[in-house]
Image (cartoon, one colour):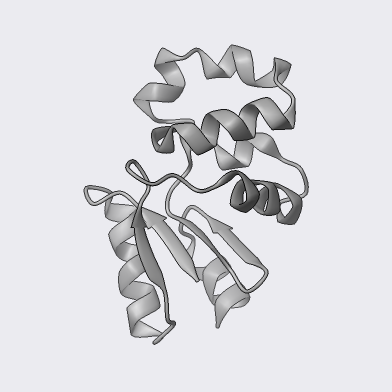
Length: 116
């Protein structure tokens, strides 16, 4: 599994501690420097039932500065995925993908049900 994180994100650190505590093997990638790929985002979108908004970090500065609240409803999935794959700041974190599983954000109960 691959987990995309931001080093200054408390939620990302909690997710990493949880994975380590459960001895779940994972590779860590810096989400800003190495955003998820188009194919990873497409898989995530499929697993998440096509909900584009769930992939976006809606509380981030880039989301606000780019006016995504108004732009996102007008975008098709290809445009949104291209944008996410080129700007890791826009991706909701932590973003975990692998073994047919996708987790966006950290909710311990959801992660427990999906990964444990």
